[in-house]
Image 1 (cartoon, one colour):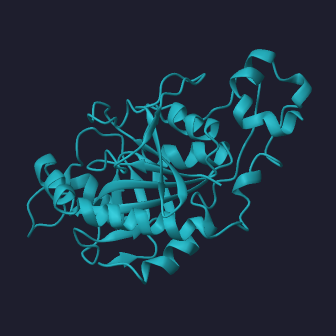
Image 2 (cartoon, one colour):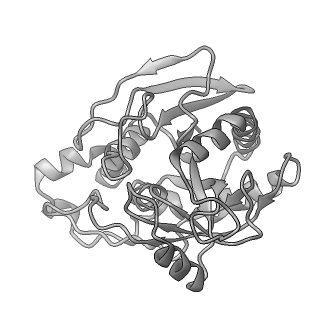
Length: 284
């Protein structure tokens, strides 16, 4: 078992000593090279979502290449970090939310590995791996700070932050936090049959809270910098804990078993080649 960690804004490295691997994929280049190291004996593959120099806008992140690269490296579980704005007063800056649902407001990103002669419709009723969430909730009781066991993440396109009208509408719809990245990862991880969970780090109150300043990039990055070591501690504890859970009872790692529509012998060879890492167990 290998655990993958996706670092969001403010988390661009995880290891002091590391093995660096550049991966080519049929979907282009990932955001950066993958770094491979160990936390308490558990092998971990780390990738900064926006690149180590934060050069990718949320819309420009090559989510397909990122997830495919993890699959190619043998990762079976992904723990994804993400900075978010809070849409509820009780979710305060510096709190952490173990996301359980997503609402997608993006429109400019490739959302699937499939097409080009291969059709599959995976289930996303529960877009976050239930077993990973269960383990993270159990672990959260031993970690410092306030960690909320559930929350709905509304994924906006960006790169601009919300208008106040948008922020208030999202609040009326009952969403908990807002960000620009993690829904695409959840979709693609499910298609790649990788268990996926998100830890959302609250940095601000978006722009709805009249008693707080409107969100700015400087304010977000300051919160992240001030809490960088705390974030790393949470990630390290989560990796160590998850590494001890040898098996998961979820259906994520067999998501395509009942989702494929196109017969394997009817898939064009060029598509089979492109999807080799995802479909190879069904070709044997």
